Length: 133
Image (tube, rainbow, N blue to C red; front, side, top):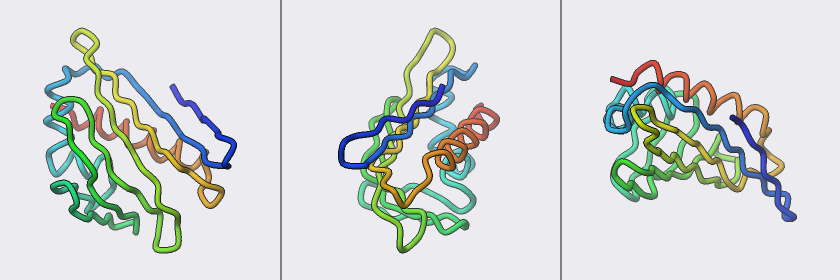
């Protein structure tokens, strides 16, 4: 499921979600692994502790904002040095033996293409699903 929410300030929020056939604990463990972080952020992308910077091989970068075990990861995301500051929230919700993964990319201004971001995060969900233990 994909959703685009626009506000009056020209900011948009891109929301991409999927139910994967893996238990929540497995998805969380995968996201915290090196392979899982690269699945989410791209090659070389590794989230650290709150306040730690990250950078992926494709030039995207940001700062880890928060971790809430088995529930949420939040980080800033910049496409490149000239792009605006945006926030990405990854939320996990157990649905029986499956897990709902929702990625919310907030404060998407006019400098970023929501369609490209939707494709970017949908591909990340594919990689996370394929890497889940």
